[in-house]
Image (cartoon, rainbow, N blue to C red; front, side):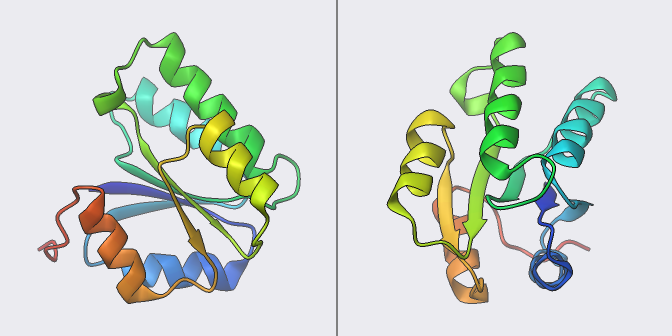
Length: 136
């Protein structure tokens, strides 16, 4: 599995990376602009992300805008639903509008509230169809 972790908070990025390291190769971005760049660059290099963890509240370009841009890139490539990256929105906000926008306007796959609980995250990965066997 290949994952992109997008968060402007150093602690949150590192925590997600530590949880995911046994299951995935992880790249890191600190804002939405870096996330969109990494997403495009990976596709240009004949790769793809299986999973993106995307914080909603970030400077420069927030998670909502990055989510819309990633989905627009996938639409331009005419990817079907099975080929689209799974995006788990991560945020400290318990804001119904932000959640609504992420799911219905941005087509987020899932939503986790920070601080991220390792067991909940692993359960969500399984629910999304990912193998959580440790990589060698």
